[in-house]
Length: 259
Length: 237
Image 1: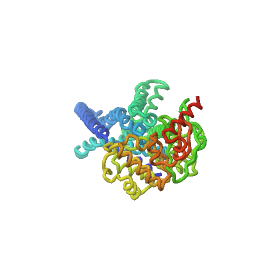
Image 2: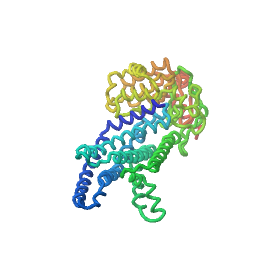
Image 3: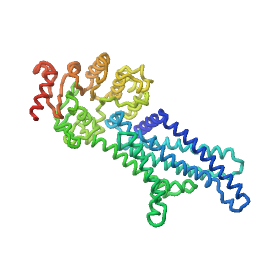
Image 4: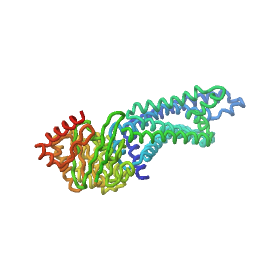
């Protein structure tokens, strides 16, 4: 069982890393997070100079002013990138005929889904590593004694990783439901866009104004971004991943019934 | 080796396969013949367990492909019409992958590489191979683990005459120690490699006889095929 899951994971990783898409994404992620870091850093320096003599300046926390906004900007890039990353996982297997090999093999549908998801998790972790690299360089070149909060950075990266994995699970589910990679990317992008609408559109007073943003995975990242680790937020992401993988499993099983 | 009982499959309102009954004895090379769209691939997919039947059942070596799909699949090597390969991977990576999911070691890969003569293309990307070699790699994947039953769906489709001859030679040699179910609509291929024929038309079985019996009855396989299909269509209309 473990051998089959590892085999599927390895092949999916080979497929991901033998095409230029992951490298192009890594490049853009690195370039844009570098750009965000420069812009946010410059704004932080300006604020520090402006309020340096003011006691309020003590509230200008480096992490909350630079790292948290950086992570919250990266989430938008994930909304665009991860559907592209996932679109081929199962949809193109059907299109190129290799799904037939898996469907007639000893691989259980759940092993297939888990293997694919673990491979996507590795790619998401690698992308988070790219984002994490530049803040770490900043920490390395900072003057000794600077208040760089490594714990908060780690928490933000855990949040970004969980968000990426949840998006990947949604992308995998979309890819399991169609033969067309483009349709799979479009479907998961629409879902993630809906998550964004939930957060933006739901911001207001009253019951719905409170509930709708709480349902969006993007809102759940905010606590992680500021270095606050919450069991409820972790639980939310795990439930979202489990739901999406269940849909993916149904999608694979449906193939056996509907042909 | 295979026992199909009242095997049927419909897609929405379209009846693809209707009440097929047949049995394959171990060690035979059986042709599964029919015009395009007759239901051959649907039947093969039900035998491999990749597709669930609407009704009826298939037993492979005594295992129901629906009730005990993994025990049944362990007996089968399947080469679909389009070889099930990852174009981004090298031949050896495709072989390692299938070997891993079947729980086999390197010796199993070496054996199929030798049998299918793939030594020279092992490090080539799948997408760079000729059609003939792609079919050979597909066959090698089916042969991994030496399953007793081989199901080959149009293995010579799209090959040039030399490649067809090579593939037929390979199938003949496999017939000596495997049960082979070969789907095709090329009747010369049936005469060349098969000893038994299942004919299907519009999802129904129209012949289940040895190749020699059909030739004796109709003169040749082409005449047998046309005559049986015409009789079936007349009966249905």
